[in-house]
Structure formats: C-alpha cells, structure tokens
Length: 179
Image 1: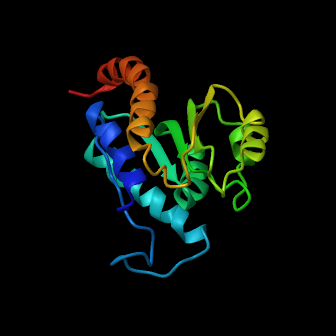
Image 2: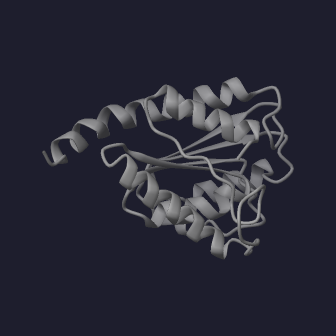
C-alpha cells in the first residue's frame, strides 16, 4: 500500500477525478488475517470493490494492481462487471496465471520496466500478445520492478490511459443515476 508505485497509481487516478482505495492484503502491515497465497486476497479485492461501488456509486472503477496486486487484483477485476478497465504494473509473469485476460474485453494497460527481473521483456510481450483487445503495453526504459527514478513517467502513462475512459464513461453513468 505504501510503495511509491502504488502511491503514484492512486495519485494518477485522483488527478483524473477518480476516487481511490489503497489497502494492504490480509496479514500485511497492520491488517488482520494471514497470507493465503492469493486465494483469500481475492476476497480482499472483492471487499474493496464492494466498498467503492457503495461509497461512490457513480464513479467508474478502474482496478490497478502492482506486482502481487496485479496477480490477484486483475483476475477479480476482469470478472467483476463493476470494473470498467484494468491496469497492471510490474507483472511478475512467472508467478501468476494471467490467461483469463485472453477473454476480457475491458480496456487494459500494462506498464513494465525494461530492467524488471520479475517481468522479462520477451515473456511479458508473449503473454500480453495473448490478451484480448483493447490492450496497451508500455515499456519504461531503464526502469526496475519498482520503477525507481521513473515514477513520473508511470503516473503520466496511467493518466493518459484514464482520460479517454473517464470522458466516455462518466456521462453514461450520470444518465443511469437514480434521482
């Protein structure tokens, strides 16, 4: 929750007018529970989506996940109809199965560092090529897994991805609002 990558992703959403929720998965920091190898953590993501959709019913929900958070969060976001788009940062491609994204029609952005040891370029490109469109893969030249020294570029990339989604989605949500 407190990594600079997660902070900058949340900041990008806030700059575009999207409410954000950052949280620790069970057993991390001062959270309750114990690590559940990603299974129980998907319930944590679902609880976060429940909170956001209740607290901000007219706001679009864009699920963003970094590293372990991408492995757990993107799966939930791909399946949940409340989520309108997905952003994955620093995908650890050898640690998680992302095959479900081959069927997801939601707009997807993936940001990877060219020096990320958990996301080798050839493996990431091969994996992303199997995902359903629309999808964008953005490489940050010289960036490691934590995008050290490149966080401004990461934030701007996310904001550029979000702007057209927000412009297209908010008017339709406003018309669905009940008086």
